[in-house]
Each structure stands twice: as C-alpha cells, then as structure tokens.
Amino acid sequence: MSRYHSYLNSAEAIINTYNGEEPLALFLKKTFAANKKFGSKDRKQVTHLCYCYFRLGKVRITTSVQDRLLIGLFLCSNQPSEMLQALHPAWNNKVGLSLEEKQSIIHHSFLITDIFPWHTEWSSGIDKVAFNKFHLVQPLLFLRVRPGYENVVKQKLTQHSIGYQLLGDSCIALPNNTKLGGIIKLDKEAVVQDYSSQRVGQLLLLIKSKLDKPIKVWDCCAASGGKSILATDMLGQFDLTVSDVRQSILANLHKRFANAGLKQYHSAVVNLLDIEKGFLKKAQPYTVIICDAPCTGSGTWSRTPEQLYFFQADKIAAFASLQKKIAINAIEHLQAGGYFLYITCSVFKQENEDVVEVILQKNNCSLIMQQLIIGYEQKADTLFAALFKKSN
Image (cartoon, rainbow, N blue to C red; front, side, top):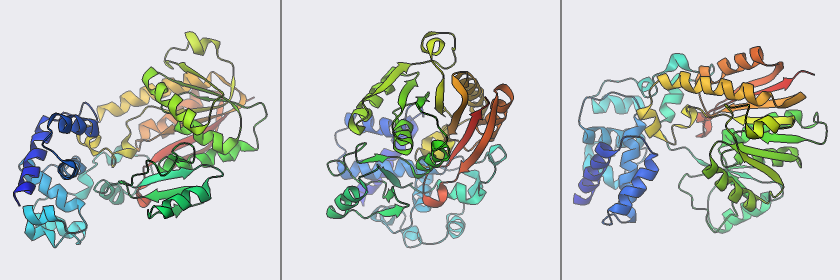
C-alpha cells in the first residue's frame, strides 16, 4: 500500500515542477535519471499517473494535484488495478462504467467537452464528444509495412507472440507499449507511422499515373523523413530532395534513410521563410512538393497530452501565418502542371481550410482534394491534407 502512496507523492512533485517547456517524456527521463531510487516498475507507475493528470486537458477541477491525479487515473482506466485499489478502492470496481457514470461518482461538475474546449476553431467533420473522449485514451502504435515485407513482418510478430490487428494490406496496429527492437528491422521492413499519416499516401496514389518522368520530389519540411519514405513506397523511384530548418533533425533523417535503403537523395538546411537565399534561390522546379507543415500538433495531443494542458489559443494564428508563408514560398518552386501536397497534424480550421484558401488566392493552383483524416475511431491521430495542381 505505502508504495502506491509514494508513487502518488512522486507524481505530484513532478507535476509541480514540470512547466511544459520540453516534452513530458524527456522531462520524466531526466527526472528518473537524477533519482536512482526509481526502479523500472516505479517509473512505469509514476509515468502513468502523470499522463493521466494531463489527459484531463483543460478541465478545471478546483481541488488538489493529488485529487486530479486520482480522478485522471479513474477516468483513464477501464480495468481494475492494484494502484487504484490502494489509492481509492471505492472507485476500483467501477472503472468499467461509462464515462458519464464515472463523472457522477467523482462529484466534480465538468463537461467532457471541456477537455479540448476550442470547438469553434475546429475544422468541420469532427465529432465533438468522441474527439474529447479520445484524449483519455492511449493511442495505438502503428506500423506501415513496406512493399515486399508483408509476410516477413507478420511472421516475426507471430513468432514473438505479439498480438496485432491488420488495417488494410500494409497497416498493423499494436498496443502502444509494444517493444519491437530486435524483432522488426525498422524503416527497412516496416515504418513506425500513425494510421492517419499512412492514409495520406492515398493522395499520392491519385496522381501516380499522371506524373511525367523524370519525377522530381521535394519534401520541404522533411523532419525525420517519414513522408519521403512513404512517397518512395507509393510512387516508386524519383529524384528526391529533402530539407528542414533544423540540422539536428536532418541528422536523424540520414540515419533513417540508411536503414530504409534510400541512398540517392539531396538534402539541405532550408529556411522556407527566406526565399531569396541559398538553396531556394537556386532550386529547380519540382514535379511534386510535399509540405508537412509545422503546426500546433493538435490532432496528436492524445499522444502528448501535456501539450493540450499547456496550450494557449493565441498560438493558432501564429502557426497559421507561418504555414501560409511556407506554402506560398514552396509553391514558387513547383513546375507548371506539378502537384503540391499540404499536410498538418492539426484540427484547427485556421491551419487547414484557411491555409487552403490562401494558397488558392496567392498561387496559380487548383484544389484537387482536401480531407480531414479522422483518427480517433481507430485510436490514431487526426490529420488534414490538401492536394493542389499548379496550372500550366
């Protein structure tokens, strides 16, 4: 019993210290490294409590940190646990009740839709209640099996008694805590990629037969290269250029590309806000430009609930302004008849449909398709994607 109260006290101390300026996972890693008293099980339990606290998002509960930790643990649980039994036994045998029934038990008045309260800012098509409820749930881990490795990956998972669910031909859903090290050759055989991100590939397939060779693709906000690997698997061979404003993340990209077997590509550190310098000034027109733009990340906050907890709505307009400038500058380097794929992992209209409108106004482009890719029904992220064609 006493160890669970110790976990509660440790989680409270972490919550009182953490300010949201770095990812919670990194902060916890540093905290545990500096406090060797935490064993593996201790770290897991304290981490779970902290995430339960932040999963309540913007819900205002005028009570202590420990009470919010317990309420979060109760609402985020669907099976009895030793920890809840030790800390609040009256709730432990009621974790299977509906969320609404649980609310009546805890005697704190709030709406489920208070978790993520900016409903008027959303893109259209989101189920308000379902989306809010999803923030109390840990999303799944998704693999995208690369072409030719479908049987290999499934056999390896089966051999190691890892249960999985198939979503289509190449998507595998796994529990979030599944350990794949030493089992799957990541990036070569399969890529860790959210289900909704994988579905973006369907927009690339729309244009595959329409591309005149040689094909030149620029992944202009490449990050660690996930969309470039996806494009390679969707479109086949092409002349690839990747860029990002951060040198450090391009270093990660190079490692992933080596694992994935991508050897022939060009890379550069590029500030897409400054079109007159360096790479952008000398760039040749591209057949396809992929722009996975920096954004609030609001469609992924079930994975990183601390970002929801600390988020301030004035950041939406700041990101939208950045996205418009990036998109307009990037499209300058798209050849006539070429395609521009704009992507965010945001649910906010200002970052999605409003940017589409600006692209149509400022560039000589037509909109082929735009889509809010709902993920909460599959315990996945929610993304937005829009595909444009530049006029001849």
